Amino acid sequence: MSGYQPGEQPPRGGRLVKLNTNENPYPPAPGVRRVLQNFDASLLRLYPDPVFKDLSRVISGLCGRGADEIIVGNGSDDLLTMALRSFTSAGRKLSVFTPSYSLYSVLAKIQDCECDEISLDEKNGFSLPDDAETRIADASLLIICRPNAPTGNSFPLDRIASLIDACNGVAMVDEAYADFSDDNCLELCRSRKNAILMRTLSKSYSLAGLRLGYALAAPEIISGMMKVKDSYNVGMLSQVLAIEALSDRSHFEANLSKILKTRAFLSDSLSARGFRVFPSQSNFVLVEPPSPWKAEKLYQDLKRNGVLVRHFSVQNVDKFLRITVGTDNEIKFLLEQIDLIVPGPEGLSAI
Ligand SMILES: *Cc1c(COP(=O)(O)O)cnc(C)c1O
Picture (cartoon, rainbow, N blue to C red):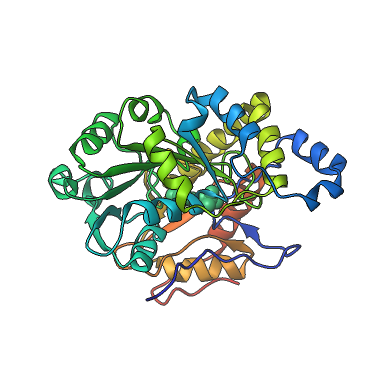
């Protein structure tokens, strides 16, 4: 099998403007730094709380679910692994949509379970196909990424409800980008016994390096996932720093509003340059460069000029670039480089 291909992480201190893995360009809440500076290192002799009680209380306060309805992971990738190990195996089926987060199908291969990849309708802005409910009915696990990556769009809430209800197995909604979206699935998942809602602190809380995600579901589902997780899957520092980040609501709101403003600026500026820009409900935009530009060549030219964006060498997606919303200055630099690169039939670049 082939493994998951993470986006490039160039050496730290390098000069590349990094717009390729949807990290947040702004620092985390100031309390994170303060707690880190004052942390008593001798505490690290001890194992962390295996059931993250203090952190669960904070998550509970934010989303109104009980402690027995919450599980925390070493990033939401860890939660995805737990879900696949809990709810799939050889002879059972995972249903996902495509294009979407490619880790889902990689995890299915590890479990030796069938992965039904249902194509989204590109012509209609990567919307859900009409027969999706029928196709997912017999899945033992369904994963819906909403807003979806790398397309950036959200699916209608009533469609999510109908998919969860149509699924005879467990239905997971990956809300890695929901904080950047107009709405979310918190309420509709709360009232459904077979639903798991998953969030991460990697994007909207500027903590990709910390590795922290959480999932909300009925107690029966959470207790099943608790059985398969590593006993101490979330480090002590991750737990205390996540509490700080989640508790600072004003930093969170200010961070989000900057990202949303820059997202509009980025989308408008690329549209004005003739790019096809998909409407985004996340902290990135999917774009198709105007002819005669080729996405892969533009990706290479931008990298040479100091800007890293994401290009997927995957069928049907290879004509697009996915660009993370950075700071205003980073986006201005990106636009300057685009204006310098001359598209030609052979993709000749100016510099
Ligand atoms: C970033 C991302 C994740 C992983 O988040 P981590 O918490 O950093 O592991 C999960 N799903 C999607 C769709 C993502 O884009």
